[in-house]
Length: 228
Image (spheres, rainbow, N blue to C red):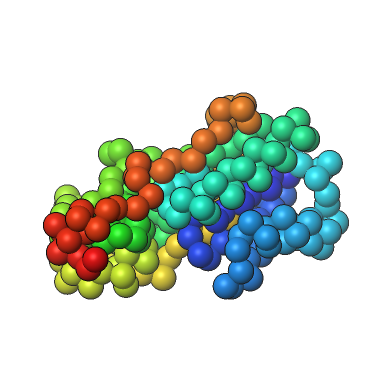
């Protein structure tokens, strides 16, 4: 069984190949558009693994939330490959992916949404079955991010670095700002979803944007105390 995974919801894009519980993962070159580097990187990775597109059984992709352009790149490339190869798709949420990367039982994923906002996800690990979102993903101002209920939470994601107010509000918990969505976790969660029979028809694949607007007007930014 081989599953190709693509993750480009942040600047730290990557791809991975899951082969019967063994994972090969490669990071996208820094400072270059994912739209230009992802496919050549996938081809190189498959060649190094002694595999090829004809050997794949499914394709997993990071569906978001995250950077709009990055989400469209991963979804579009995954969809195109799946249609061309006749393969099922496995969409995996970026907030769930971050929680899987963290390795804890209960995780709050906080991804920098730009424009002074944060993508927020309250996640719980269900043994070897994967990650479950306890509530719908949210788009919040940093000072509106709710404190997690109870103890033993991990707080992960680059929003902790982008918005210092989060670190001060969440200092009582285990904060790990370095954790971002990675293709290796997309591959693992995708393999679990495939085993549960949750593969998707490629025609139905769409990113999970959460935010409905790419940019706010000058008046909206000024109303929130931002700059024009």
